[in-house]
Length: 118
Length: 112
Image 1 (cartoon, rainbow over the protein chains, first blue to last red):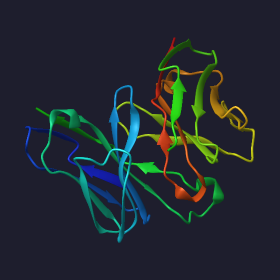
Image 2: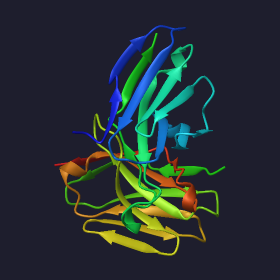
Image 3: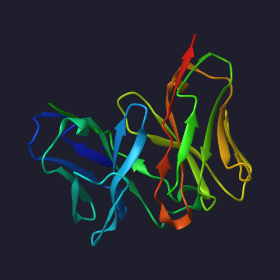
Image 4: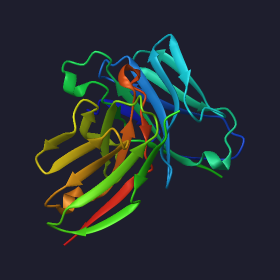
């Protein structure tokens, strides 16, 4: 089973609709992240959470909100979707206390959600 | 904040040749530089990383070099194989923050 799962994998919606993307992980990591990927722009951080009570904005948080329901679950919401939010969205996790120094700071990504806003 | 530039955006090499991808960063406080590989339809996966107290690191056919003075680091893949075809991202981070700033990606195509 995948360690980091995202649902849905694909979603097509209309402008103005509220959308929620969900991320679950079985790695037991405290830290979770949401990124969006656009062609030519790489991966950009939307929000991140270092534990259940800690939520932080990333570089492109406008138009998005998040909820950390539990250590294993981190959801991204688009309150009123617009076409320029069409992108590939990734959830990732990391462990601030990894078993080896070599894996410190490593982020583990989910398979992504392709969102299209018409 | 940190800014990471990556070049080239696309790279085509013949099987067996070497490939080099270069990145520059802006924040002199950055001290951790990972490289991620993204295969089609999948999320990025860490392939190698380097910390600022090291100038070079190798792992089989993959190596990363770091020049702190010039603030740039590079990924070197030798003896390329078709399975190396993917999008590669460099990133930079400052110590314990574990927030990564990614480059814009390089699409590597290895042709037979």
